[in-house]
Image (cartoon, rainbow, N blue to C red; front, side, top):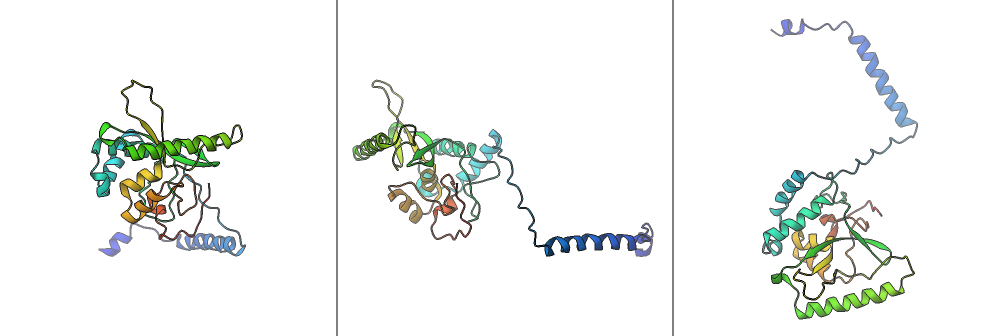
Length: 234
């Protein structure tokens, strides 16, 4: 049976094929021995997910929520994650556990002390509106921001290192207050372990990713215990 199968093939050109393979491997050896390095593969072009792809991604993220986030309104969490999924490349995922894999933010940014900070706007419903103590802290933060902004040269970057700033709402309007929040704090709240989340929540400055990038929102880079040998600056 085997002989009848192989009888369909003509092996008379095997020697020529062997020579071709030999030439190819010799060329490869010459390339390596010359000391030249192969060019690094180019980054894929920036491309965002479709609405359907974002929806699928959000549903997958919903299964990974930390209990602190799972206790919140699921509609609100979905809306937040939908905004995140719409503002990162389709080739990147902030929940990718690989420590060498960045996830760059392509949404709204503000500048603190000249450095970019990824932000997103969140509207609080009546059940989530801040307490009096939180309002006082936010008012102090806004005052600090205004003072630092006044000290910036004209045309320079804006406010100080704060976790969020409330937008103004005219008196008599019924819209809930809208806050600009650091995306990394939002993701830490939704997904990070208690130790990482608590550490970030207590920071008065913006969180620092392991990769040193100012706009990387990879949750894996929040954890200082994760080694990151290849620093990437932006």
